[in-house]
Length: 394
Image (cartoon, rainbow, N blue to C red; front, side, top):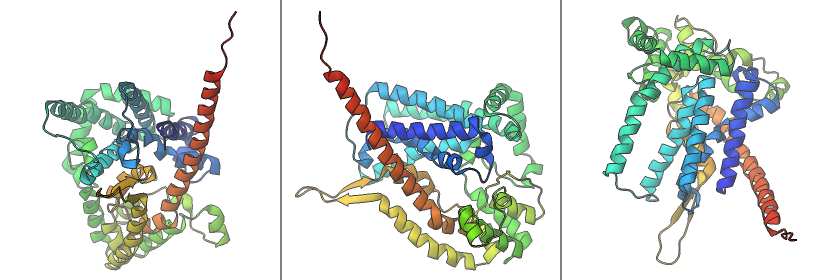
């Protein structure tokens, strides 16, 4: 794709975020809804496409970028951050940046990018980034957690105001962190692990720990956990298919809870719908299927690996030149989920990914690629037509 196509993809993704969380929040927070609204919601991951433009060598682009581009990208980042605050979602902002980081690491491993790490400029950049992550951004993340209980009852614009107000209250932020680190909190469902709330988001071992603790209370082959796991898979089918197959699972109830919520409730914990504690396949798998979950994991991960492996092609170079690798932008957009795939909530999620996840990703990308290519061609034709018009003189 051209840079203009990628900016258009980002614009479609941004529009999807604005539409389903600001204009029609019922779509954003509901499990089901009208197909058009859910289609726009499915395009939200494309919001992060412009972040990959600087890494164009990975998908075949070689043109240098101007300083103006980076200023525009900075403004785009600020806008995306504002939308993330309106959603009260740290992940919706972070995963765009992690896609950039993971793709860059991939480029380094493949030899596409070469850099000297130990330079003064890199040292300054790392220092600024460290200060942002441990200071202002960490405080903002805590403020988002403080106001999260207001998500269902306030508009996105009001949520931004509440978040900024909480961000200004440093004492409330300090108290919230002390509360998270307290002994009482750790006896329930202890997800902080690290002091920095953004860094803690990636401490994936905590999810395994928490669900294994709940599994110890339930034991293997818990019938409720089995039923929930199977129903979770069946509910991934579109509603017309569910009706045609006479599947009576309640999609609204099933998807109003995460696997972390459900296993915690079964083990005697207190919770509520839309809490979305992040579970892990180790504990939920043991509770539902015993040690057989490892066989399910092993069988399903093989086709998943092969499908992800389709996101690149290997071209033979000219004589005496090495092979050249080119990655699909579609695969790079999903690279965070690739790198974080094994901490998934349940082995059921792997089956869901094979059922519709990979296909949905590819079909959406293909459709958006063709649409943006068509729009780009029309834009360039109209631009050339304006340039070629004769100048009237008197």
